[in-house]
Image 1 (tube, rainbow, N blue to C red):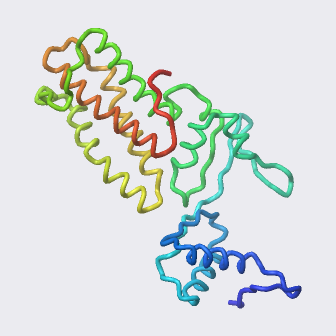
Image 2 (image 1 turned 120 degrees about the vertical axis):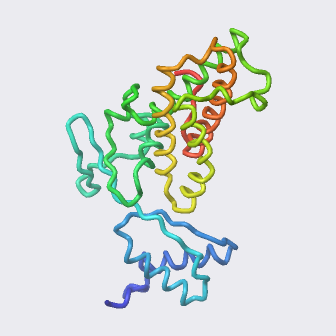
Length: 255
């Protein structure tokens, strides 16, 4: 292909030149690793920046890219085409004002970066289990509610870590134990692969096991099964809290 232009005829640097200089400056300031989050339409320019940095003697692994496809907004009237030239665009602040911080953050990362994201306004505003962020948050809230009732009844074990777990024999209980054990691996993979959607999928799967279990199985007043179930729910609550916190989303005690 053509050689990329670094300086215009009037001597001013092109965007590419500025980008190269910016990363060189980062390296000189002692950064070990830089991750750029950019739109997929910048892919050719990214390859040029990487090549320039290699020619300047920077280590190969210094610069990584996380490419994102475009976001399409879907309102009550259907899909809305964004165009900065035509003056049709939405600022992030407008989005947060409209649907709240939690839904904005969650919806932005719940799909693969390389897939086109359709941001559904009406769904993001819904306070129902159809809304994925509400679905996960509500699982955390339900467990908090069970714990408040357990405290009031005097059912809460003093030391959850020493509770006998052998009464946990329901299929959902065994499945939850196996799923909770995967949490560190999911976080590690999501981080290394720049794939926070894996964490969203995992949290939704946990909530998907919990909600039907909560509707079907009595937790309190069940003899030896109660402390075991409360210990399991304590583990689930902690993982939901930590998972949502990593995404920058609140885990409410009440909703």
